Image 1 (cartoon, rainbow, N blue to C red):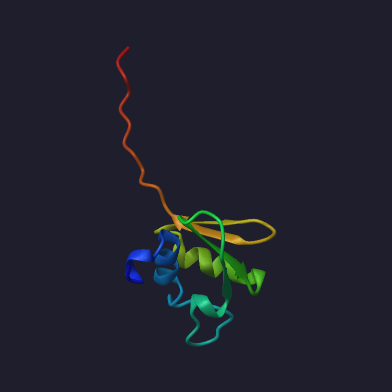
Image 2: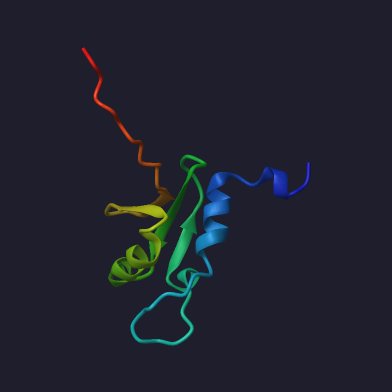
Length: 93
């Protein structure tokens, strides 16, 4: 098996977000990976992050919210792909 076929969805999400530009503390050339540490474990459909500073969450949510759900608790932040919104039609009884 090659390395590409062994990638999990979590790995793919991390690869997509780690180098995104982040508007942080008016510092130039900041990327997501400069302000978070990826944690290993949990479901392979989510990325678990430890924020280096809790103040970064607003900037992180701003750049990720269009494509990802960003959930936070006291221990870590979870990033996962947004689920598609389904169109519902009322059922005839």
